[in-house]
Length: 410
Image 1 (cartoon, rainbow, N blue to C red):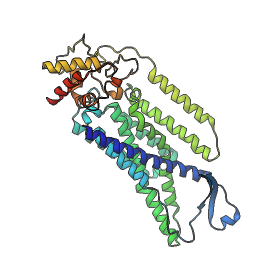
Image 2: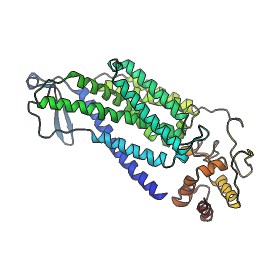
Image 3: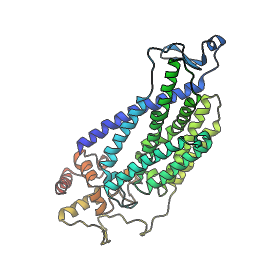
Image 4: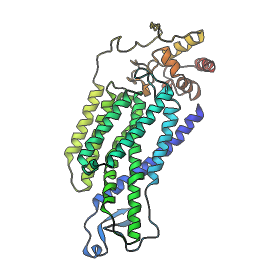
């Protein structure tokens, strides 16, 4: 439906803008906090813990961080929270629009697990909410006092969630749900801990009361987690453009490996802000990415007939009597058009010279897949008319009209 595409466009656009604002602010403050230097004595007497000078936009900036707080609370105090909240709200809206409104096309893959749209949506929500609750509960236990051990537990949680998601949903839907969980964890850190701790600190300073060190310690732990989760979630946000990752037979392990390398590379920049430059981290990260790429792209032996159903072409027919078959002459005509114009790219074994993996995981190997993906097929060939890609197979207006006539009968 065109209106749904426009809604998706506007929400995605806003999501990207909000995400840039949130991640940009996060990166800046991490750099700022790690780049502060010991101030001169006259500044220490004013309660300043660290400062730095910067130049930007044709001017000089002096930034200072107080050990306790200013003697008089400023009239205007800038907070940074809505960047996080708006990113999460728009991301969840996008999840609903793309993956829940069109669950049959984007979220459910019968070859992974056959389920109804309602069941898929419930599983998706449970995965996100359950993972976030487990994380938040762990943060409130004594495990939070052991950062390295907690990091191992967090990695284990993401591994388990990645495995479950890829064994429930389509590869693309699985990756996005892991990303939604990470985003939920990150924004919950801001909402449930970082912002409340900052409010307590501001109230204490305003009332000339002591600041409880535990407020800052709890907020620091969450900030560190958000810091290392930033690059992994950025990869997941763009992952739907790269089906060779989420369509890999071990797609859950591919995702875990990519997230681990991304977090490792983030560690390089964290150390660099502290004045510790370790090129070995970047080099090992680059080697890791290269090994992942080789692993994913290494030629595999052709699957046997028991592993994957042979693509339907104009010379072959589906022989599995249990599979749905075209009934009317119009059905058969549409199937012939799909064979001619779509299966070169959208098949288990594409023959197209460019797309060696089915784009977005959409496959039209048989009539069941064609009917299941019918809304997408109809929209892209008769409404937006951007498929076949660059019309490289030369689909005519008359052929598009046949698909539109078939759509009217669905």
